[in-house]
Amino acid sequence: DLVQEKVLNWDMWLAELAKMDIGHAKLVFAVPECWVDVNDLKDIDEVAYLFRGKEGFRLRIATKYNNLVRQHLREFGLADYKLVSSQGATEGLIENQAAEMIADITSTGETFSANNLKILSTNPIIESEAALFASKNINWNANLLKRLRKFCQKISINGITQKLKNTNFKKPPL
Image (cartoon, rainbow, N blue to C red; front, top):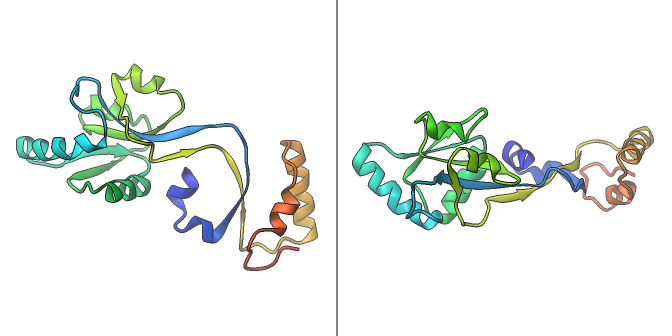
C-alpha cells in the first residue's frame, strides 16, 4: 500500500519480486457507528451534501493515503469532500473533531471498533501485504544478485533470480 501511495507510476520503476505472506491489510473507509443510515460509499454522497449545507464546509476524510483515497473517490464519482492528512492515530481524528470519517488500513477492524467506528461495506480501496520489490533502474551485477539471493535465503524466499530474469528492466540485469 505504501509503494502504491508514495511512488507515482510505481510499476514503471519497481518490480514486485515476492509477496511475503505477512502484514495483510485492507485500506477501507470507516464512519462513526452512530451513522446508522450510512453503510457504504454510496451513502456518503448524500451525507456530504447534507453536511455541507448544515455545517458550511465539506465533509472531512482523514487519511495517510491521500493519493489512493482521492483516486478511489474520483472513480466512485464523489467530489464534495476534503482530505485531512493524518500522520498517525487516524481513527482518533473523528473523536477530536478534526474529521467526520476516515480511510485507513486495517487487518482485523479491532482498532476501529474500539474507537466506535464501523467499516463501510464498500470494497476496500486496496488489499495489501508485505512484499519485496526491486528497482528497475539498477544494473543487477553478479555481486548484487549474490547479496539478494543471500538475503532471500535468510527470509525463505526462493526463485528470485528467475523473477529478475523475467522482469522488464531498463538495464538488463543478467
